[in-house]
Length: 123
Ligand SMILES: [Zn+2]
Ligand SMILES: [Zn+2]
Ligand SMILES: [Zn+2]
Image (cartoon, rainbow, N blue to C red; front, side, top):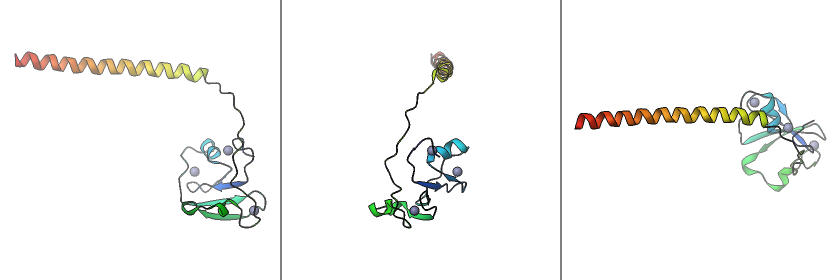
């Protein structure tokens, strides 16, 4: 059962690792690589458990239904409300940002030093 889309009607087979997932986010959580985009998606209907392919480049309204049991598998996703605990992450972000600033300052110093050097030579 997928925790991202509560009313998921069909699984997708990831073209990259040939594994079945309920949604792209499930794939992201279970994998160390991004979901490869493909024009021909393989679906597995949750209702009749049959597998079918869809050409995503020519996807029409009738393609939203399972060709075996007419189950509408393209549905508006019901997503759970999530309370995001990002306080710890914020601290890390702040630290990284400070480091970036310091690096930038160093770069500028070098730049100015070079300029001073040149003008000295010119004069
Ligand atoms: Zn994959
Ligand atoms: Zn999911
Ligand atoms: Zn079906």
